[in-house]
Image 1 (cartoon, helix red, strand yellow):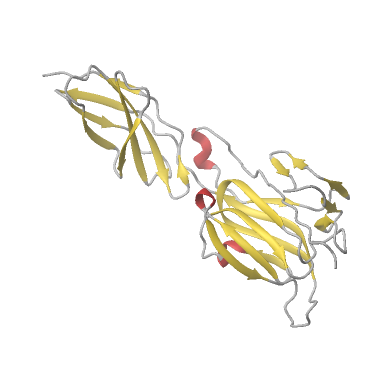
Image 2: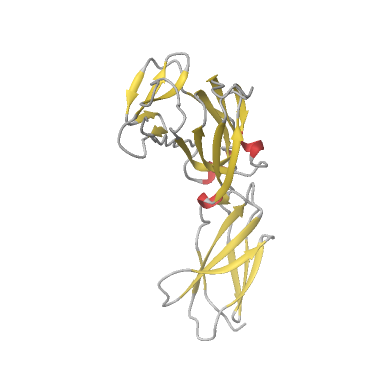
Length: 261
């Protein structure tokens, strides 16, 4: 009996990696696995895209005009039953789908290329396993009720070949701008401008003498009132905008001095 082989294809799929412009990254992207010639490699890279097997060979094979296969098992140019590929994204994504160029119905049940697909959501949380079959575009996000995905493991039960992977990166919030802090006695009023794609704002504070910032909590508005402990000489603050996909870069840091007026 043929030994089962496993391979992981790690895709660093990201449009904007860092900075305030990340909120503008929500544009559909398609990564094609065809028209590259035939390449057998343990590590595939294309711009910000990288794929690396989880273990030693088998290797990845990119077949001209057809798509992604695995070297090993009974056929080198497809994903055989028992082989698997893990697609991982740097940012959570919606609209995730892959295009199946070839699928086999080995059990003659009328369902071609039956495949177990495991989904992983925010922070890598496992969302479960669904069965996907057929050729052409397969809507993976819909199979997981539209939840943002950070990774999917494709484990065919019958032979398939994947031609491309499509997704829309999450729209992360922009960094909050214009943070100001005004103190009266030990009461501090913080305010900032609305950040694009933000749902809530998380406030951080570091008092004089403290080594690290503390998380003060979240607010849905662009203002926050803090009360510095007695004896505080100064406090520093910054704000991070958040939505269901993650957080923004931090705002600029402001320093506030208490006053008794």
